[in-house]
Image (cartoon, rainbow over all chains, first blue to last red; front, side, top):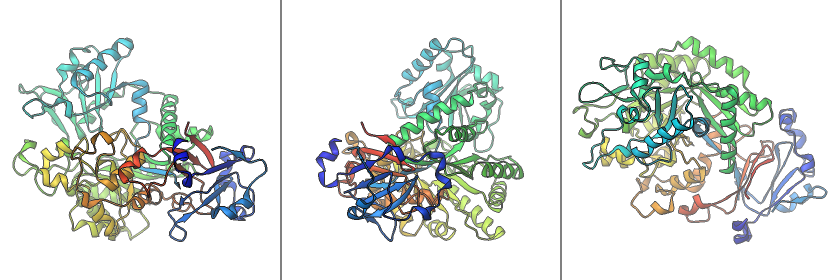
Length: 92
Length: 497
């Protein structure tokens, strides 16, 4: 974590709720449509950083969230607060 | 920063870990004496083995004081093991060094002729020297087949690789299955056991003499069997030529006199051109992607000709045929590559004066060796460049090294960076372009652009978290960046301690 401390502006908070981590084998059964709502609870949120998406329409973002193995949000840190889940666990 | 998980579009995931776990590991050794000692020590520790295999020697350590390099010889091995066969593969897998027992069991004598594109080296007295190159390496296959690993042992090696690649920020690969080695099946079993945490595209080797119908049958069956989120099969791997340092790469212009092959020696193709064209066309027709090894510009030209012919015969389709390595390419062939939508799977790890440079320079001259890997020209003409390592010929396959070298065209190792190791800086790519090459472009190469390679709602959450923004630091420091997390399918598979 030394690098993170040296680069505070780039620091990330990773929040994860282990209890709803997806079961790997279940990925294919999920429909992407059902996970698009930005207000829903994510299993993993990375925020306060720079995300290089490699997508032309939105090359960079501040935050990204995932659920059931898939990306459910790419955007600003503000909106991603809505996806926070109860008792988030701080990893860094 | 966060980026899509790094992917490697050309690697051999199990091979070095098989060596590390079950064979003589020569990869980190630097001299002939160390090689011999390693074989001798392995014999002492495995007194009941019926055969010894090893991996990772290089030509460099055999260079003599006068600058010539006669390479290894069987007598060195005979001195430490003479009663059972010893077969040692070079780091690039294109040569084998064997003892007399292995030659005897393979039936190789002074009268044995090398197959097309292959080479059997001889001592001054005409006896085989104990070094076989390219196609001739297959002459000892029957002997090396005595070394059998179980599928469980392959699974052990694959899991070791998986753990290591995650620690480098990697989430996906294209890997090549050697004939008779059940790697793709082993990966399939790991998936069933819930242990697979990397995305894999598996490819099958195809050699001259193989029946196109049989090949199509095998690969189509594998395509049907493996089409999950984790493991897919789309691809046949073919060798158009060999390697420059082995004088087996096919160039449009002759080698220098240092190759010792006469004035008009341009190397040779592994295949007869007609057979090659037929095989490529058959694959294309069956909807199978070909992934062609071509180092010299002659081999690249031959590959593009075959792909063009296939497109004419079968109609243009979304075939994503790939040519890999491309040390040299004729300026005329770059626009053709773009027009035929052929992907360039390049190894940016080699874009500086790397471990192979001195031998390349000796074989084709300084000017041509310096001009190798014209990545900028290819990118600007619109060729899709997908990054890869060709591990284990590139033993240190960390994608951050690849990104750095693609940008600096210099060694990624701090101790070497001030030692004139830049190769053709005018062909540098940018950090953003290199990031794209090792993420999005590999996903496209392996037909996974819909769910991998970029970060977008609905795609798989395969990501890498780095401890700094590599677009904002000096490029020479990129490879010193730490991977904090690697995430696959939203799950953390690596966390920095």
